[in-house]
Structure formats: C-alpha cells, structure tokens
Image (cartoon, rainbow over all chains, first blue to last red; front, side):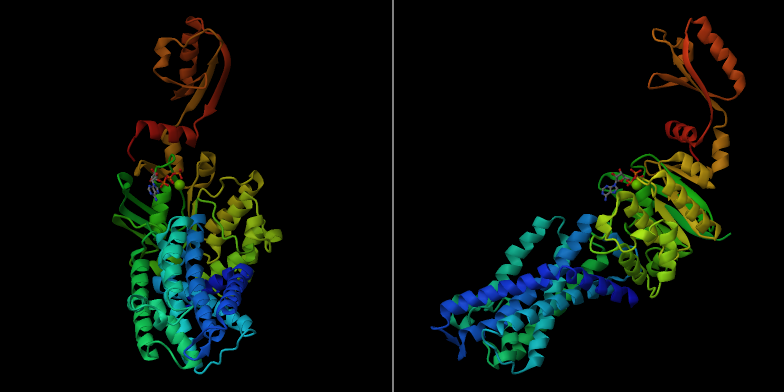
Length: 250
Length: 302
Ligand SMILES: Nc1ncnc2c1ncn2[C@@H]1O[C@H](COP(=O)(O)OP(=O)(O)OP(=O)(O)O)[C@@H](O)[C@H]1O
Ligand SMILES: [Mg+2]
C-alpha cells in the first residue's frame, strides 16, 4: 500500500513542481477560448435556455480536465521510458494494480485541479450555477479516470514523443473537440448527431453539464451508464496490458 | 550456507539473438561474486531477468528462495540492483529521490539510513541538489544509493564504477566490502578486472550467453598460473618463425605466456641466435586479465 501511495505522491509531485505548465497554462488556454467564443456568440445564442458563455464554461472545464488527465499519465510514462528512469518503479515490489491506480489517480487529480482552475477564472465572466455537485464530481472523476487510463496505455505503447503526439492529435483532440463542448449536439445535422452518440466524451461532457444546469442532450443516467462502462472497459484493458509487461518488462 | 541466488538453465532470446543460452549459477549467501564477460556477453540481460525487468524464455531464477516471477514481491524486496545505464529522475533532489525509492519498497521513515548511505558515498553535501545538477559520477553514486535504501540482502552492481573517480571508487568498494562483511551477498559486473580480482571470492565468466568459466578467483588464477613476458624488438628485426606460434602481438609488443621462469632463458637464446635486438622487456605475474583473455580465446569450458 505504501508503494502505491509513494508512486501516487511522486506522480502528483512531478506535475505540481511544474504546475505553471501543467495547470496554469491549460487554465489560460481555456480562458482564451471562453473570451473569444463568448464574445463572438454571446449576443446571438442561448443553449438550453442558458446564455452561451455560461453554457460554454462547463464544457471547457471538462475538456481541459480530460486533456490534462491524458497528458499527465502519458507524458510521465514516455518521459521515464525515454530517460530510462522507469526502472525505478519496475524494480520495487509494486504490483501492476498499484501501478495502474497510482498513474490513473494522479491523472485524475491533475484533471480535477485544471478543471477547478478553469472554473475559478471563468466564473469571473459568467458564473454557472451548480445545481447538483454530485453529478459534476462523478463525471469529472470518471472522465479523468478514463483519460488517465488511456494516457497510461498511450505512454506505454509509444516509443517516441511524436507517436504520443499522434495519439493526442488524432484521437484525444478530435474526440474532445467534437463532443459538444462548444455547442449542443441538437444544433447539429442529423448525421453528426448520430455520430456524436458514439463518442464517449460526448456523454462525459453532457452529464457534467447536467450537474450545472439540470438540462442536457441525453438523460444523465444514460450518460453515467456509458461513462461508467467505458471506464470499466478502459481500466480492464489497461490492467491487462500492465500485467502482460508489454514494453515495460521485455 | 544457504543459497542467495539460484539461476537454473535460463534462456533469453531477442529476436534472432540468443542473449542467454542456458545459464545456471548458484550464489551462496554472503558471497562476493563476480560476473565477467565481454560486451554483449549477456551479463545485463541475466541481471534483468533476476530483477524482473526482463522475462526469461526458459528456466527459473530465485532470490533467497523466492521465485522472481511467481513470488516477485518477496524476491524484489530482497534484491537491490544498480543498473548499468546512468538514469535519473530530473524532477527531484537526491534526498527526495531516496525517500521516494524507500517508499516504493514500503519503508516509511528512512532518513537515518539515507544519511548513512549519503555519507558513505560522499553525497552528503549534495543531498538537496537536483539530480540534473549532479556530475555523471555523482549520478552513478545516487544509483548505488537507490539500490541500497531497503537494505537488500542481495546487492547486484552492474558496472558501478564506470565513470567514477579513483577516490570514490576506493570509497565505494570500502562501503560495499563492509556491507558484504555484514552479510550482504554482492554480485558485481565490471570491466576493471583488477577490481574483480581484488574483491570477488568467486567468478563466473560469460561468453555469448554461456558460462565458460566458474570457479573461485584463486583457482582461476592458479589455472593460468605463471608469468607473462612482453618483448619489444628493435626496429628491423622480425620475430623468428619458431617463436611466432606461441606469441601474441599487442601494439608492436610480443607477449609470451610462460609456465615458469625456466622458460625465459631458452626464449632469449632463440632471440639472440636470430639476431634480434631487444628494445624493451617486461616480466609480469599472471593476473585476472590473462585468465580472462585465456578463457575467452580458448573457450575452455568450466
Ligand atoms: N532489449 C534488447 N533488445 C534486443 N537485443 C538486446 C536487448 N538487450 C540486450 N540485447 C542483446 O543481448 C546481448 C547481451 O546484451 P547484454 O546487455 O546482456 O550484454 P552485457 O554482457 O551486459 O554487455 P556490456 O558489458 O556491454 O554491458 C547483446 O548482443 C545485446 O545486443
Ligand atoms: Mg551490461
């Protein structure tokens, strides 16, 4: 247990020591998105009866949280693989389950911290009321967990930083950007609405937003079922990969 | 004496390359054991299999009776490995690194022991320095320290003195010797053969994934007992053909392995008769380097 706790502590310390890049920078990016989009669209749009800026904020919070959760586990792993310091966690008696938990929980924590930071600075523009904090917390934790686990897989699989960038640019970015962060999918043409329903990130954002406004594109229970199942599947796959020793223990 | 490390018919293949071709070794508790061999012989691969960093294709390995795969938690807790590659985590200071490493092994408050390791490795003044700011030799010392945080009964050092200055090398050996005297089993790989000769009680020599010699250091030295005569001839002279068969050339110097001092006189006589003038001549006692070269060229089985 102390092995897990120490690994978690080390993973948190790792991003916290460079929190200017790992927390402050994504918060700034999200704030820029909000300033630009809300400035352009505020006068014209209301979504679910909510002013556009307020509608946008939960989506930005969740998008930043998800992207940073992924970035945390994946970049930590690839860095330690490339520098070779990954042996320090492979030599001790740490089980693959502890390994998984430490990386995923650290990723989750970074996601939640970035999310909280985005919420804090954007509340200055438009404070979205939070109707049901429990939904909010559930979705950000599960979403961060999924992305942390995916990041673990990507970090183990990639041998080079550009392979990881590929994973990030061609999977994580499109999935998060096309998930209804900036719009309600009901405003999309029918075809794209259908497509969106296959994107698990859509459910993370939609459920998360329900926690704020009490309205959403699909029922929050449906979102929870999809997100919960995704978390279970991704976790199981990651655990299997870790148990096999793939690319870590040759 | 109980067995600290048992390696049983271990095989490991990387694609088409047979890195370990059935290695068996038993190392007793309290031994100071040397693992020697040329580059690529399979020393690091064997250590990786022992540490669980690599999985053997066949065979088994145990540390103090615990299988490194089936009972990996116990095996890893009993083993401290200094990796060959100079690796470090750039985010942390020396002390943070050692505290974190202690935690990985389930040890909570370890500062007394950490301070002792730091003092012995002459790192006390660098305790709060970031790893990035250390010199290469200092980073290697931290690697040694990291392997010792959990006071492992079995310590494996994969070329710990590469790039370490003379003074510290002495200090390091003093420390490791003391650990060995206190009962820790030490397994050492090194390319400095005089180091192995001075430290190791028993030595295995590996070549292309096989053990080609395994004996006590004194027996190995005795097996190749004798002297080496190095002769450099004055410019135009060539070595007489009858001597060429038993000599090896090294950078213009001819080297003869002698079974005894009585062989010197006839050898010099032959040179004189052939009209050779001697520029330089040296007689040395056989050391581990001669044994090593002898074993590696003759492929004599253990
Ligand atoms: N991960 C790997 N993938 C492919 N081949 C490998 C790998 N690791 C080692 N080898 C090969 O296995 C053989 C044994 O390598 P090993 O590192 O065990 O040698 P060594 O005895 O430690 O050599 P050195 O003295 O240079 O450290 C070498 O031919 C090496 O190229
Ligand atoms: Mg090696």
